[in-house]
Amino acid sequence: MVAGIVAVLGGIVTVKRFDTSLEGFQHLEQMMGGPLPRGSSILLLGDAGSGKTILSYQLLHDELESARLCALLSYDAFPEDVQARMTEFGWDIISHLRKGRLKIIDCYSGLAGQGEGAIKDPSDLTELNIQITAFIAKAKGGPVTVVLDSLTPIFNGVDEKQAINFIQTLGAKVKKTGGLFIETASKGAIPDDAAAKLRTMADGVIELGIVRSRGKSHRFLSVPKMERRRISSDSVSFQIDRTRGFVFRVSRFSLLKKRVFDLLAQHHILRSTEPGERKPAPQPSKGPPNRLR
Image 1 (cartoon, rainbow, N blue to C red):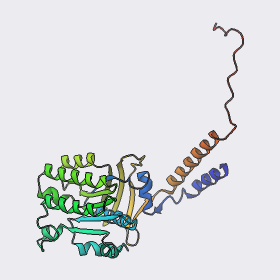
Image 2 (cartoon, rainbow, N blue to C red):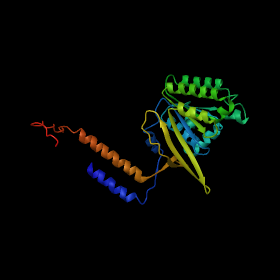
Image 3 (tube, helix red, strand yellow):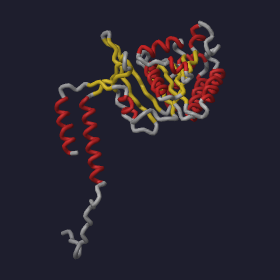
Image 4 (tube, rainbow, N blue to C red):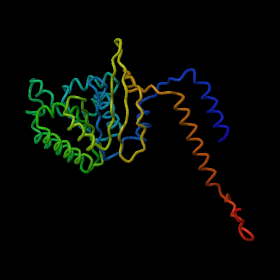
């Protein structure tokens, strides 16, 4: 154990000059303290163009690959565009659509004025609620994941109270199955008080930001809230790779430092649980206590 700690400390000295590393999508799980908690609602909140939709698609694909029944409420893209966008990243959803494991509910066609889509009136939340309820019933008690991309058209189509009630009801139905309710929202596109309520209602919040400078875009992600988890709320830079999706740019020094602390903590736990180790009992004092002069 000690040799391992020494080796890691040596590595820290080595990498100080080259302190940048790229970590895969699994780094998000480290920030969240583990995989997304089942039976929860997750709000992806961020600037326009920060990557909320891509992140929701990647999470959706992971759920499908885990053989979970999924539905996508698409308010920002036609179903064929969703399929094309996911295919760009190598996330093939055709087989899942054919097998009935994925249902794309087209709420965008009605908004765009190009056909009625799955919902004649995208602001008709009652009809949408009926379709989602029927989809959940199809799972026969199994977990269901629902992705809603995005909330902006809903708040633009109905009053705030009605939108909040719909989101709360839908989230409760999905969570009851033990699945995930993932929703995206753009900062500034919905009222501030509504955004505050969404943060409170959600079990987890993932925030994305983007800064544009000199023709380049720099994206950042943080996890300010995740129920039942010990999280890292640090803001981490990331890129969107065309073959891997989200790729995080992390400090090697920070990763190695965390590894040292984990090794030290593990070593301390092992030492404290070794059999036969007992703290020496305090010796009884003999004679009267010394008086202070």
